[in-house]
Length: 424
Ligand SMILES: Cc1ncc(COP(=O)(O)O)c(C=O)c1O
Image (cartoon, rainbow, N blue to C red; front, top):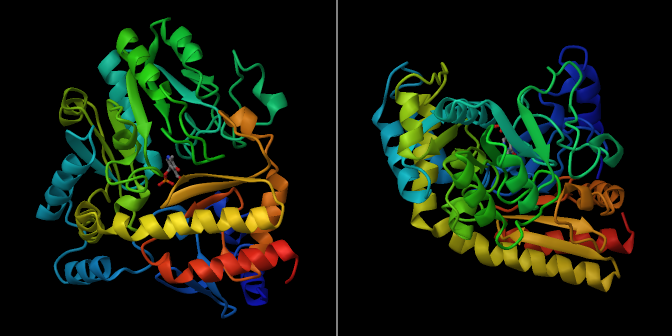
């Protein structure tokens, strides 16, 4: 497969768009960022005319695949009614009601546009509720691109300092210094207990299953222990379920593990590709947003996006997406394990049918530091080779699966087979 037209477009566009892309996370990809013409179901068509089986899925949102009929129909119908009203519509109330039925911690809801913003709203609520300012986050976890949280997302071991007292590491030039921020390795309950005992932490924020850097499950009892430590110290627990929400299941990681946070951040699969996120949580805390904690946004609950949200949540609430993806994702994980085993490649595949992680090497990491021992460079090579066989996977190892992937599992496995055989 050739990607020459994409390359030419990116080179030409770099004269008018910084780096030729509109998000940092779309650059640095091999062979170069791609330009797409169309997307349908599980397939992307690029400007070279290549048809690619897509496991990026928009970085996670497209749970129902690209352009699924229920969402497209709802959006088309809404375009004849309203786009943005700077007021309320019945759509957002219906969508909010579904959220309260699906997500255990969701007693009250506020919609935003992006996950990054919804994280900021959650932190503001936590600070207002506790009167404290420090936020505790974990190495390797990503909570959006804003200055106060984009710390220690992918530091080197040298930068990160000792595990008992990590040094916060900035992710960008120009980032404001770390203010009111504590950073720890994940999956070590003792470290959390010790830090919270000081009584100055407003909130602990985490991805309840870490998918942004490695794909690591919480150790048995870890989430419960952090919940207890938060309760004992008057600290709010925030689950950032922007990835895990609606992918692990309709109620996210909190339902899967039976641990209910005080606040939850949702995004991505919530609206199947439309820019919608939410902060939800216990009434006693979220009530502050109805009062003196400010949360705003011109585009919050834009009508078309809300039509997409309601259509997506209605599908999710029916359970049908999970019935479809369950066997497909499982067959894919099993097929991959077999292909790698046959080729003598050591691999670990962890996660769920709709989102899992493929990692080269034998390491079973419990945190970001240990995950650095995996053979990440070899996986980046594998992902680049797989693209030439018509399968687009994230170089960091996360695979997102949609309801449309059923017909593409065989082609995916045969592409993997060919890559492992070394043919192009
Ligand atoms: C766990 C998590 N939180 C927050 C965000 C930020 O969401 P957004 O990109 O919509 O701002 C992301 C984005 O990838 C994420 O994965």
